[in-house]
Length: 159
Image 1 (spheres, one colour):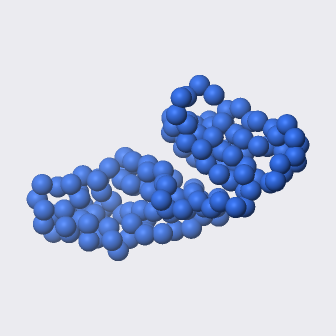
Image 2 (cartoon, rainbow, N blue to C red):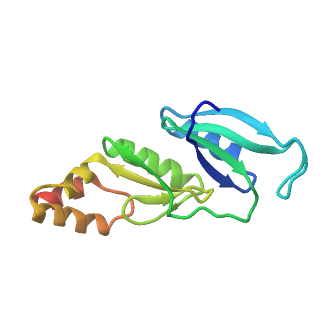
Image 3 (cartoon, one colour):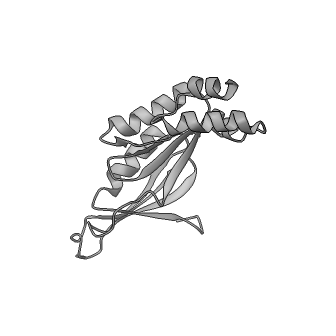
């Protein structure tokens, strides 16, 4: 492992599957070293995949197959800044369409329970608009959405 600081994500035996999906879905992502258990442990047997080193959009991660005891929560999420509606749709649909679930305001979960914020840069710009009335309109429009619709955000921003 090269990085001094790595995000460790807990999985119930599916770390390699998740890492492969992330590598296929997100740019600048890859699966690195797969570490197998040198002996039996509470969630697995000797030889099982214990840990997977991977990157998600350049962020070093370690998937740990620790068993069913710990679940992901929205307290941690990957936030992906998208450049346009096509990228927003592609990433949202990849996550939700692969056994994930939709949530509100650009949030969704993958089938492993990891939370993702698919956040168009246009949304960030709209809610940071110095015209506070325009920002409020964009924010209120976002609050009604699952996947973010950039055209609707921009229309709300304009009033």
